Image 1 (cartoon, rainbow over the protein chains, first blue to last red):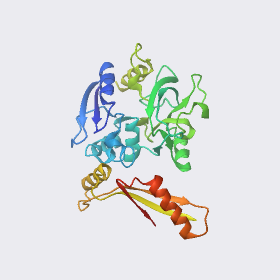
Image 2 (spheres, each protein chain N blue to C red):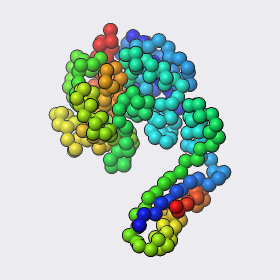
Image 3 (cartoon, helix red, strand yellow):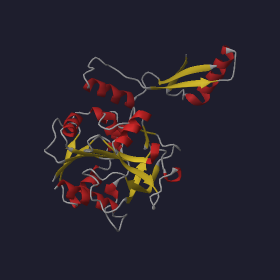
Image 4 (cartoon, rainbow over the protein chains, first blue to last red):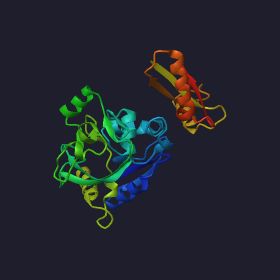
Length: 227
Length: 77
């Protein structure tokens, strides 16, 4: 399976993502944001970081870069697109995903491990995943997912909520909501569920000695579902 | 009474954010955009009926907190 990770000026999780994808068997290519065309890929990843220094709004300037047109075409043709953290912010700014990531409710940069509950398994990203509750890492200042009531209803009606913040037992409440996201939302899909954006970083949880291995579960499972 | 304030970088002070926005707009085929300067907008609700008094207080706020006069100008509108 071929994957492509797009590098924007200010991306800083691109290499971690490269390591993770390669470790689990993807043949990965790094793609510069200014390139006109995308190499042939089965999965496109928009990595975390601070593209364009978060100028204007997080992800807004990256969402207008040259390569993004190919990403949008790829997504519209059913290709798998994964946006992590800043990648999620970019996906909302392109319009591929609904809503926006606002500044965290308590105005602090959050950098810690959290638990998220997988909310939907009828998709390529989470089908067959062995755990329902994953321990992943978050590191963001703008992760407070927000959308209109109508958009939220659509997300819920179409099962587009991918993951929510919870405790180790799966309890989703305010206490286990790190950033104030509406309905504890940590990640969402587009309507066809081939585009996933989420704030937590699975690529940071792929080594049992350094962190944990719930990210490994995510990548192994994704690759298995794509074969 | 609501007083509105705009704080912008002084002319000549480098505004990388404005520059990035300008280049993005150019790239989106707004080719006649020559410069973008980004600033901040404040709406300050002061419990005061006299407009002149309110504006005088807001001017103090601008000088003491809202703007850094080394690099920024403020405009009360």
